[in-house]
Length: 395
Image (cartoon, rainbow, N blue to C red; front, side, top):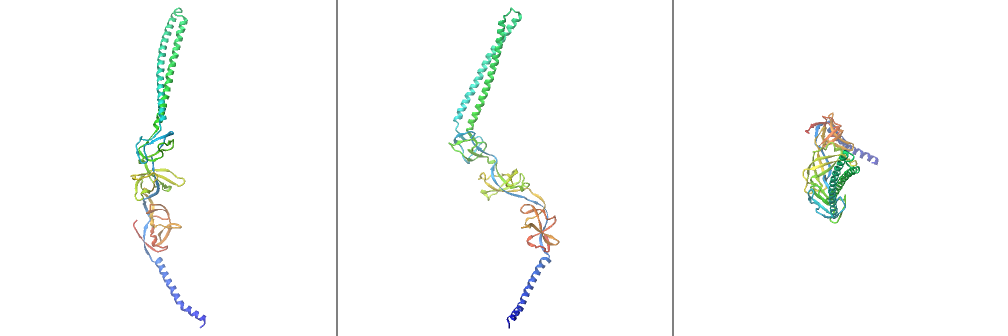
């Protein structure tokens, strides 16, 4: 038998095998198509409707103090001693730092002496004024008698004597006015001396740096022998009652967060322990770079161990918001083209794109793509075009 003949015999023998395989594949494909598109499949489903969303807003923050003071000297003075250290509790008005006050003490003594001298000048001016008043009254009486005599006739008193009496009365009047001016000048000088005394006493009092309020010393930047200068802190004092967590949230959460909302937070030093608090203040400004706004959170109880600036993770349980349309979050399918759900259209499963809004982790608000009463299907149980019989499940 030639080679060509053997080739045809081989082809005839293989054809039944290939035809059987093709027939088997066709039967399987037909069964799949019948199963998927002709038979009706019961599928768990829910209907779209309104729902209350329990919103939670997450963010990050840090521990800050609303009442914090940098204790520094108002003048350039040497530090004599520091009476407290970091971690010490202090009371309002308690001495914290003593500064070199020798020069200030000398200034106070000089100011006290000046004030005493000014007071004595007032007393001297008053005595002079009293003497001038006596002389004025005497000269005025003499002038009145001279005028009475002159009224009797030209021979009752000499003209020169009358002129002398009148001149003496006028001079005494001027002396009395001058002495009153001396009293006023001495009084002003005394007031200036007292003001200067108060100033140097205040400077002396400032040589003792005191606690501005009840609090805790959280920082120390000076020691005995240092030179304290204005604007350079020596100690940092914090009021523990003013501690807050200042959290930051994206600007999109601004309508959700309200004063009084409960808060759960965890400090980085105690991630296993949750702390409770409430929203105390909302800052009405958005950072132009991060597009975030700040919120002050008041803790119900301050942890034993804390440090300013410590980071925290925050979750605000915002008040419920009623959504006109909401669906379970696990029914949403995400893909490169966006998010969608499977719905029933004319008895078959169809995929519909969605525009979603608020998301509380379990339920998500539907802004567009669905209508009230639409029936949603479990995404892992259907294929496009499959005939389905929805079996409604409770929400």
